[in-house]
Amino acid sequence: MTMGEKPKKKLLVLYASQTGNALDAAERIGREAERRGCPASIVSTDEFDASYLPHEEAVVFVVSTTGQGDSPDSFKAFWKFLLQKKLEKDWLQGVRFAVFGLGDSGYQKYNFVAKKLDKRLSGLGATTIIEKGLGDDQHPSGYEGTLDPWMLSLWSTLYQINPKYFPKGPDVKISQDDLIDQPKYRILYHKQDKLESTLLTDSDIIQRARGMSPGKLYKDKSKPDCFLKMTRNEVLTKAGSTKDVRHFEFQSVSSTIEYEVGDVVELLPSQNPSAIDAFIERCDLDPESFIIVGPRETENSGVNEEMVTQLPIKLKTFVELTMDVTSASPRRYFFEVMSFYATAEHEKERLQYFASTEGREDLYNYNQKESRSILEVLEDFPSVQIPFEWLVQLVPPLKPRAFSISSSPLAHPDQVHLTVSIVSWITPYKRTRKGLCSSWLASLTPEEEVHIPVWFHKGSLPAPSQSLPLILVGPGTGCAPFRGFIAERSVQAQSSPVAPVMFFFGCRNKDTDFLYRDFWESHTREGGMLSEEMGGGFYTAFSRDQPKKVYVQHKIREMSKKVWDLLCGGAAVYVAGSSTKMPSDIMSALEEIVSEETGRSKEDASQCLKGLEKKGRYNVEAWS
Image (cartoon, rainbow, N blue to C red; front, side, top):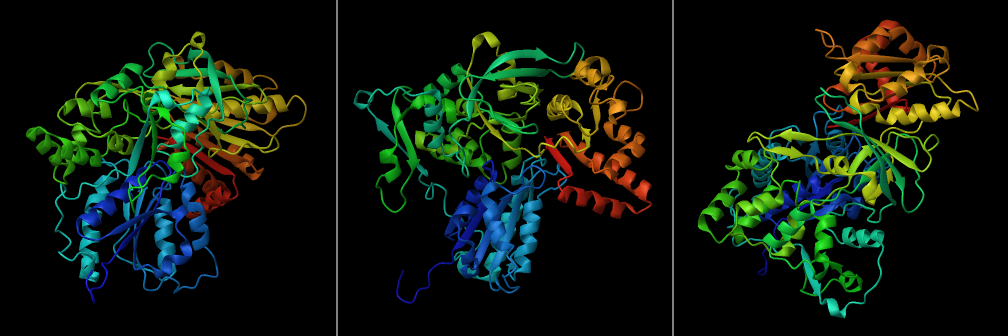
């Protein structure tokens, strides 16, 4: 920089990510800014001191919304800081900002975190650069369908505000061959003969591998809480059902199991061993080599201090435990980096097209719509040989899969039960695809004694006290947590009084899809948890057993008087199941009941239910 020349304008990109998507989007925004000549810093909200915000000129926020409108863990402290009453209305005067949210329009609180952040920043005096962008998982191209046009608008508006952001204009890009970034990670290789042969437990190995994986997110627990082994694998659906739903039982093989009803367990699935071998061979890697993975030092080529103290791990083990090579589809940036390493011209051209804005739809049809795995994509472009550093960065991380627990520690000590729909689908090109974790679980038998690493955590359904009346709504596999609730309350009832429970269950056909039928019906009999004499009830909706479809919301309306009486008696509502339409349909049915019983408007009824939500008396756990 010469004398008198002002430093380039810099863009700050702050992100809050729970599963990695917001980080991907933030990095994409940063890359696109740098391609136009504007330096960018990409920082997680839990690593940025919020008190410095007033000193920034332009900030782009990329935030995801999880579950029922929840913010990522990495955003919580940052948001708490922004909510301080002592912050004046002009605290962020002079700061320009843009918000891009990642959400799923199948959920009621779609992009809730992005919306509330956008509103709060404006309330503190900051100025919006452009209208907030709302990425939607339901869009055919995912969040990128919104991100691409939103970014183009961001660049042109920033340029109008101050041309110094993009000295050559917002549309002039540096050639990607000139700007192929260095990978963010480096690999240190170790000779096996120099390593001490230490005896490691499975838990240590998993902690070591996942602790150095780029897929590690905010305060990610690398070490499993315990290992489970399967003791039962039972098909719940009957012949003729369109679904394969299983009841799995597990017991601990290591430490004791600790959870409450309503909790969630995450399982780390195993990948197909032959696919792992094929990936290692295709990428020309040595499966027996020992490696340490760590962040690349940007200031110099020195080795990161943390890497020196880490213990190496076998390359094949690292791939198996951290890199999803068999089920997750790669992101667009993967195709861009592949194009740089393609030696066949026709492959390079095709990959460059896929990575371009013009090729987005064709890439979507080739990649996401067909659910192509990393391995399949690499096999389709044989001239590409990507260095392992890039693969570590770009192959989607192997993520644990979360399931609602369907047992009770009181009724089923030292056991974990799961109710799992085995996922499979046909792609447009008639390929059969299977869910990695559910199909793997379905293939296991108790005799194999496979040790499964698991993590327990709180879901969206807090364990209720036995004195709390309950209105439970759980169609399909949404019944899973409520099997635990009712089993637990049944044990509690043996020694002390318990509050009544109403349970609404739904499925397609009574004869083929009635999950846990014997269990529910046994609790409707005399003195059972769902019996009339206990003040409760069990109500079923079999949607396809009659010409006109009947769903759980219809049954709730039929029982409006009893539902209202229970709500007046302090009941809590718990809803679990598919995120598509069901949760909002249940909310509408309850709004109608409140409106009819009180004579108040639908808007007032809606506010009443929102009040229940705030008090923790309306809880939803939904999944797509």
